[in-house]
Length: 122
Image 1 (cartoon, helix red, strand yellow):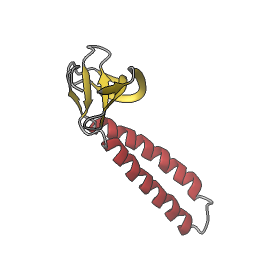
Image 2 (tube, rainbow, N blue to C red):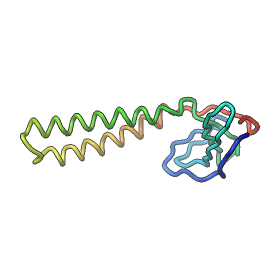
Image 3 (cartoon, rainbow, N blue to C red):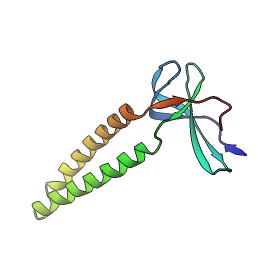
Image 4 (cartoon, rainbow, N blue to C red):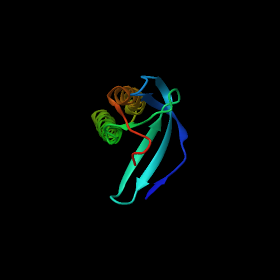
């Protein structure tokens, strides 16, 4: 048995349809939970051709976000201890964090690969 939600628009999601190669910063997305065997499938639907796809490596964004958080933490606290306080490290850390978020979004958009799936596939 598959439990699913309706399709919703996900904004700021880099999507490239594997069927028609349509590029967009938004996609129709829904989650499907399969009970036997237990698994979660995030299904993406192209706005242009209406075909379904899924991410080849769905865990990649989470792993990159965790690694980016560790890097920002180390750099901000490294700056704070190097200067004996939080005077200049806070603005530098915030700027670094914003730059890292931008770089993170760019990297995830370039390494996210979508693969086609049929509408019947659970």
